Image (cartoon, rainbow, N blue to C red; front, side, top):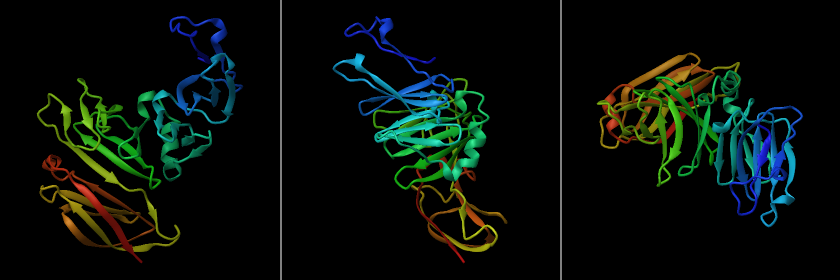
Length: 307
């Protein structure tokens, strides 16, 4: 649990005792994953992160340091490599490790919910990371069951939002990608099925109903200060229904309640809300009509007018 080993040159089936590298973490713990950054090897332990430099011309001249003794990783499926670094799940935050071995927490906007999940883990299937190379974003899923909640981190804009996959799904068990770099996930059904994260239909399934109901919710936008309430006047949206009927639902959520517009969104709209609150969240979903899953909807613009 605390050794990295390498074989002799041209002898992949032989590992001499001299090629055992012990990671002496004073806080204990064990190795949960190994990745690479540039020419370095990153060893993730439950209570620390080690940097192992192995020269290609002579691996025996390796050098090892504990780069971050107070930050650990939860498990191997909480590690996601990206082109410019590595994302990983720690107890307190989701972190980004860059090529200079600097660690930056990125889960500030969802920190309370994340810590609730990360400190009550019962298995490595309940909190997974996956990097979507095509759209440059990070998927993090939890709550396996008939509803799987996913937090998605937009790397370019540096923001989090929620996806909720519900209906016939029984929870997301594993992420991967196809040969076009499209993100797909394996469903935790009796006979595991495969779905595109971007689409709404199964790639293979023996079920008659292949539709998946999808919900997308923003984070809470605080208006001014939490001791004052603000009037939400309007929500402006531009939706492309992909040739389908107007079946997407709009929910405007404040601490004063929810204003719902069912089977409503279609094209360019300005919706009067007139709700007072300290914060606002916008949720768009296709829960109102299963037939909506047969079309590809695009959310091109959402903004909120308030005073």
